[in-house]
Image (tube, rainbow, N blue to C red; front, side, top):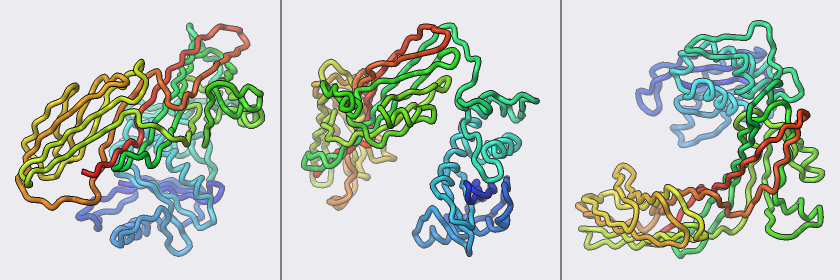
Length: 443
């Protein structure tokens, strides 16, 4: 099944289609039916969508994958999610970034409503889908795209839709569209999660080829009324502006904010000032391009004996401060595809063979900083294979370290100002986790 949306300038003039098809083989369809469609402006012939799947199939046969496919003067911009295609068509010089942003927003909203966006969820919720398409876009212009706001007046019970009769939610009409008025809590609190993911690539000689930190600050706000929040970080630019360039500071790049943040205020004096959404939200994301010392260092020795057996020794060392502990560590070690009869010995944790992925997964529930652990594995090799000198998969590592950030970013303060004058408690939690964390081997 697929979804195809037809959109043009402005976002533009748009229609939305949903197909169903079944593959007889990777390149031929036994059916190609439009399941659902929404035409917003009607200046592209609805039949044009019939050309999309044949053109896509032709591209795949030629070994090509392009996000934009053209037929005459009509262009198809598409994304794939699960067993669906979402497609937008245009015959104008459209803003492609806006179109793709809208398509991904459709996926996000539908997933919030149906938990899983797939063929069955569309078929079971036609009415809700139509209502959402009407609210998400009006005459080619994106409108309300926040799922929390939509859920205030488009609600779902089973397959039934309930629309508030005459009441228009305040989130649609007030200046703060992401927050309703009249919110009340017995206990006012804000939970702040600073989460950093470490991306590291280490070559076979033990040198760090690339590394960076991708971070986000997530909020869970349980505050009454319309509070004004001000967040202070140890931002290097802010400290330089105020002449307080002392202590540990962080230079953030590619900073992106939730729409609630006053960008003009941040650009003028680096103040992060905002009226928060109620409940959970991502306030901001950032990237820090810096040399990162691998937090968990891996050394491996893989020995093959006359193509009859292979022995693997892996040593893992925690290269972070001793006061911290990495939780749920997974070291994934590639093994030959013809390996069998696994035997393991570990100094801590447990190891298991995952034959469908040709991996040994060594799991350590709690890994204190500064500690070293060993894992030995023995496999039989029943067949004779040529050594794979190139293209050997790297060792990958997954982990999570609470109460710790590699960059040293800190929440210096969170000020909460509300006209009623109530006192609120901010709670801060720091988490470092693995992102794309790879260590290549030469054995």
